[in-house]
Image (tube, rainbow, N blue to C red; front, side, top):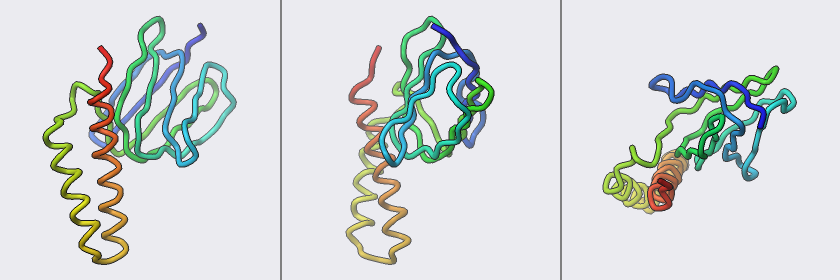
Length: 136
Protein backbone atom coordinates (compact mmCIF):
# COMPACT_ATOMS: atom_id res chain seq x y z
CA UNK A 1 0.00 0.00 0.00
CA UNK A 2 1.21 3.54 -0.73
CA UNK A 3 2.39 5.63 2.16
CA UNK A 4 2.77 9.28 3.00
CA UNK A 5 4.63 11.28 5.66
CA UNK A 6 2.77 12.12 8.88
CA UNK A 7 3.99 14.77 11.29
CA UNK A 8 1.81 14.57 14.40
CA UNK A 9 2.28 17.11 17.19
CA UNK A 10 0.63 17.71 20.54
CA UNK A 11 1.06 20.86 22.64
CA UNK A 12 4.02 19.31 24.50
CA UNK A 13 5.93 18.46 21.31
CA UNK A 14 6.18 15.76 18.64
CA UNK A 15 3.95 12.70 19.05
CA UNK A 16 4.74 10.78 15.84
CA UNK A 17 6.85 11.45 12.77
CA UNK A 18 7.00 8.81 10.08
CA UNK A 19 5.54 7.15 7.03
CA UNK A 20 1.94 5.91 7.33
CA UNK A 21 -0.58 4.16 5.10
CA UNK A 22 -3.69 5.84 6.54
CA UNK A 23 -4.93 8.21 9.24
CA UNK A 24 -8.45 8.38 10.69
CA UNK A 25 -9.35 11.35 12.92
CA UNK A 26 -12.52 12.11 14.90
CA UNK A 27 -14.54 15.11 13.70
CA UNK A 28 -17.82 16.72 14.74
CA UNK A 29 -19.48 14.80 11.87
CA UNK A 30 -17.87 11.41 12.50
CA UNK A 31 -14.56 9.96 11.37
CA UNK A 32 -12.44 11.38 8.54
CA UNK A 33 -9.87 9.18 6.80
CA UNK A 34 -6.94 10.22 4.65
CA UNK A 35 -4.79 7.89 2.55
CA UNK A 36 -1.91 8.45 0.16
CA UNK A 37 -2.59 11.00 -2.59
CA UNK A 38 -5.68 12.36 -0.82
CA UNK A 39 -6.78 15.77 -2.06
CA UNK A 40 -5.51 18.83 -0.20
CA UNK A 41 -7.73 19.44 2.82
CA UNK A 42 -7.88 21.01 6.28
CA UNK A 43 -10.10 19.22 8.83
CA UNK A 44 -11.08 20.22 12.38
CA UNK A 45 -10.35 17.39 14.81
CA UNK A 46 -12.75 16.76 17.70
CA UNK A 47 -11.96 15.02 20.97
CA UNK A 48 -12.00 11.29 20.37
CA UNK A 49 -10.01 8.28 19.22
CA UNK A 50 -7.64 8.60 16.30
CA UNK A 51 -6.04 5.71 14.46
CA UNK A 52 -3.10 5.53 12.10
CA UNK A 53 -1.16 2.73 10.49
CA UNK A 54 2.61 3.06 10.05
CA UNK A 55 3.90 1.76 6.72
CA UNK A 56 3.93 -2.06 6.87
CA UNK A 57 2.87 -1.99 10.54
CA UNK A 58 -0.18 -2.57 12.68
CA UNK A 59 -2.81 0.08 13.38
CA UNK A 60 -2.05 2.36 16.33
CA UNK A 61 -4.60 4.28 18.40
CA UNK A 62 -4.44 7.55 20.32
CA UNK A 63 -6.86 9.55 22.46
CA UNK A 64 -6.77 13.09 21.04
CA UNK A 65 -8.31 16.40 21.97
CA UNK A 66 -9.30 19.15 19.58
CA UNK A 67 -6.98 20.20 16.82
CA UNK A 68 -6.52 20.27 13.07
CA UNK A 69 -5.37 17.95 10.28
CA UNK A 70 -3.84 19.33 7.11
CA UNK A 71 -3.18 17.17 4.06
CA UNK A 72 -1.22 19.01 1.39
CA UNK A 73 0.87 17.64 -1.49
CA UNK A 74 0.67 14.10 -0.06
CA UNK A 75 2.02 15.20 3.34
CA UNK A 76 -0.12 15.13 6.48
CA UNK A 77 0.35 17.37 9.52
CA UNK A 78 -1.73 16.98 12.68
CA UNK A 79 -1.76 19.48 15.55
CA UNK A 80 -3.77 18.67 18.70
CA UNK A 81 -3.87 19.99 22.25
CA UNK A 82 -3.12 16.53 23.68
CA UNK A 83 -2.60 12.95 22.55
CA UNK A 84 -2.02 9.68 24.42
CA UNK A 85 -1.45 6.08 23.42
CA UNK A 86 -3.57 3.54 25.36
CA UNK A 87 -0.61 2.36 27.43
CA UNK A 88 0.03 5.93 28.61
CA UNK A 89 -3.46 6.39 30.05
CA UNK A 90 -3.87 6.24 33.83
CA UNK A 91 -7.32 4.67 34.21
CA UNK A 92 -7.81 5.75 37.85
CA UNK A 93 -6.94 9.35 36.96
CA UNK A 94 -9.29 9.31 33.96
CA UNK A 95 -12.13 7.98 36.17
CA UNK A 96 -11.50 10.76 38.70
CA UNK A 97 -11.51 13.38 35.93
CA UNK A 98 -14.78 11.97 34.61
CA UNK A 99 -16.45 12.24 38.03
CA UNK A 100 -15.10 15.77 38.61
CA UNK A 101 -16.35 16.91 35.20
CA UNK A 102 -19.83 15.49 35.85
CA UNK A 103 -19.95 17.22 39.23
CA UNK A 104 -18.96 20.57 37.69
CA UNK A 105 -21.61 20.16 34.98
CA UNK A 106 -24.26 19.55 37.65
CA UNK A 107 -23.30 22.68 39.62
CA UNK A 108 -25.02 24.83 36.97
CA UNK A 109 -22.61 27.72 37.07
CA UNK A 110 -21.96 29.77 33.94
CA UNK A 111 -22.54 28.42 30.46
CA UNK A 112 -18.81 28.74 29.76
CA UNK A 113 -17.95 26.63 32.81
CA UNK A 114 -20.52 24.05 31.71
CA UNK A 115 -18.93 23.79 28.24
CA UNK A 116 -15.44 23.48 29.73
CA UNK A 117 -16.62 20.69 32.03
CA UNK A 118 -18.38 19.01 29.09
CA UNK A 119 -15.13 19.08 27.07
CA UNK A 120 -13.24 17.57 30.04
CA UNK A 121 -15.89 14.86 30.33
CA UNK A 122 -15.53 13.98 26.62
CA UNK A 123 -11.77 13.73 27.00
CA UNK A 124 -12.03 11.51 30.10
CA UNK A 125 -14.60 9.26 28.40
CA UNK A 126 -12.40 8.94 25.30
CA UNK A 127 -9.41 7.99 27.45
CA UNK A 128 -11.44 5.38 29.36
CA UNK A 129 -12.91 3.94 26.17
CA UNK A 130 -9.51 3.66 24.53
CA UNK A 131 -7.94 2.15 27.65
CA UNK A 132 -10.76 -0.41 27.88
CA UNK A 133 -10.33 -1.43 24.24
CA UNK A 134 -6.54 -1.47 24.33
CA UNK A 135 -5.18 -3.51 21.45
CA UNK A 136 -1.86 -5.32 21.95
